[in-house]
Structures are given as C-alpha cells and as structure tokens.
Length: 430
Ligand SMILES: Nc1nc2c(ncn2[C@@H]2O[C@H](COP(=O)(O)OP(=O)(O)OP(=O)(O)O)[C@@H](O)[C@H]2O)c(=O)[nH]1
Image 1 (tube, rainbow, N blue to C red):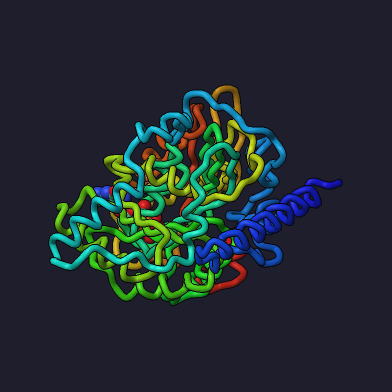
Image 2: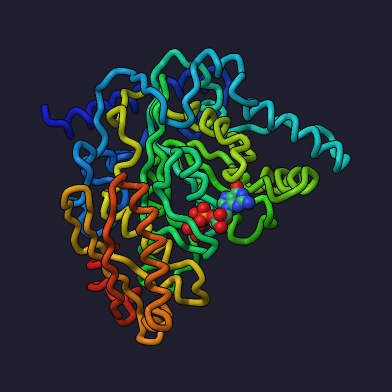
C-alpha cells in the first residue's frame, strides 16, 4: 500500500469515527451539527502531496531533507525533549498548572463583561461546535491542522511564531505581509498540532490578491480548527464581520482569538470580548498576547483539545515543512519591508536563485523584485546604502535560521506589474 493510500485509509477511519461520535452527540442532545462528519470527500487532501499552497519557486528542490513530501503518519506518540515550545505534561495540563484554562478565562471575563454592562449572565447558547468542545480527555493521541485567520495585521504570524518558538513566518506592521501558507509543528506528548499560517483575507485588487484569497479559503476548508484573530486594540469592524460570515459553512471547529491584549486595559478588553462573542457562535474565545506570552500555551491547549484523534503526522524533530529557500526569501523580504511606505511593500517579492555550501559558509544569491524603476532606486537607496542595510539585517536572521555563516548576494530587478501578470506570478511562486 502506498503512503497516499495509507493516508486515505486513515482519513476514512477518522471520518467514520467522527460520524459515530456525532451520532452519539445528537443522541445525548448536544447539537452535533457542525462536525458530525460527512467530512467532505477529500477533506485535508492536502496533507500529503497537495499540501495547502505549496509556496515558493523551488518548493521541491529546496526542502529540508526528510521533511519534504508531507506529513508522516502511523508513528506512535513521541516524546520530544527540550526545544519544543508549548509542551506541557499531561499531569500539568490536568492540574491546570501550565496556565488557566480557556474555559476559566472565559467565565472570568464573561463575569466582568456582565457586571460592567449591567447585563445578566450570558445565556448558554446552542452551540454547533459543542460536541467538539466536550472532547477533553487526553488519553488519546490527537493530531491535526489548525490555522489562524483574520484581517491583515491582526497578529497571526507573530502568534504562529510565538507558538512554534521559532521564527517561521515573517511579520511587519504593514498589512498583508504574509503571502505564503506556512506550516509550523508543535509536538506534545499526546498531540501534534500543525499550525498553518495564511495570508489575511482581504478585498483583492490584483491577481495576486485573488490568488491569496483563494489560498486562504482552500486552507480553511482543510483544517480541523480555525482561530479567528481579532486585534484587541482595534474595534470589531466590517472586515471581521465579513470573515465571520465566511465561516458559517465550514466543518472546522471555530474559535476566536483576541490578540495583542497587552495593548489594552482590562475594561477595553472586556468590551472587545463581548463584541467578538456577538459576531459568531465561537466554540471558545481566548485572549492572548504573542508579545508578552500571556495565554499562548492556553491557546495551544485549546487548539489541541479540538483536534481529531489521529496518529502522528510529522517526525519528532520537524518544526516546519517550509522549504529553506522560501524561509530565506521571506527573511530578505521582511528586511526589505522595514522603513518603506505606501504601495512599495506590496510590490516587493524575493526569489532565492542559488544556494551553495562552501566549508562553513553558505552562499546565497537572491533577486529582490519591484514593479517600477522608481521603486528600484528607493530600495537601493543613495549609493546603495539602503540595500546594504537590508542585506546585513537579512544575513543576521538567515545565519540564525541556518546556524552557519552566510554570504548574501542581493540583486534588485524590475518585474513590471508582476502582481497582475500570471506568468510573473508563477515564476515568483504564486
Ligand atoms: N503589542 C503587540 N503587538 C503585536 C502582537 N502580535 C502582533 N503584533 C504586531 O502587530 C503587527 C502585525 O503582526 P503580524 O503578525 O505581521 O500580523 P498578520 O496578521 O500576520 O498580518 P498579515 O501578514 O498582514 O496578515 C506587527 O507589527 C507585530 O509586531 C502582540 O501580541 N502585541
């Protein structure tokens, strides 16, 4: 039996188990509606070869050995040492020593909200995801895919990095920084959480924008748990309502993640949580700060709790399945975004053309694309000063990633209107 056939068989088993679980939920009066299971043919088909949004040119050739072609199934529960974040023992989780549970947090905040607004306690609502929310026993191995969605700049990539404990996604204060689907893996004793970082859903103005939105929807349809991110320092707006309305048809368990709570006072947070809770029937609402680390592990607990029972998906020591060359191109793009304004951030794309290891030195040759000549001079700067800064900043980050000394050769090129040109988009990996 091929690996693909094995995966399909396991998927079918899981779907059948979910169906049975769903039926049990209905029988006991839970609203099993959402996840009961007809699972959707081909759901999570991307787990193997068709991984959601294989990003970047060279997605085949630049991969790290042993990571490449998708998750590995059928391995037993693992025990990883040291470096992986988010790991806490079962005993710790059961005793709540590694942080308050989301449920407790929610009740506490719910109480605050009702006392401040003078409203009575929120009535329990019929919950399309309650069946999944009931699943708390940890004597089974859980594995699956979760993703954060939300409007641009909501803090999705920062949160993904905080959970993985390593920079796998680049971040910036420019909206729509994320262009690739990046998968980071959290290993726990009893679970494996594959976090998928996606671009923010937005109103597309270019072909690139349309493709990114398609990518987001594709990922949504393939994940087990979706965390919708709402930045605590911005009021709930039209964009949030648009995203929430798109979730109604999905089979995944949908939770709300209120991000950047370090930026607001408790009163503002309480009001924000209330506004979020009125948007959609979320299975849980978890306030977090990726910067201070507040509740990040609690969020991991909540995500894991909603994963299906499944064998391990990736080998123990893998933190991301993103090809090295794509990670490197992203680090260069992040450095190039620093200090540029207006439309320029959207016009920048980076492609690693060549990488070679010579002794203890990794030589990297990369092209940085912009759309117009005027942008080229901005990126290069007077006498090449800006480009030099970009190169040296990116080099530091790449050295950290690779753990070797790096020589970085950066070349700026103009690819006219590449965001609207299907051929250029393909070349750039979209
Ligand atoms: N203070 C604070 N800032 C945060 C936090 N999380 C993210 N940020 C900042 O918010 C900005 C946007 O964060 P990103 O993680 O890039 O947001 P994103 O949702 O991935 O953005 P897109 O790529 O546009 O979809 C960055 O400047 C982050 O440093 C947080 O918990 N606290």
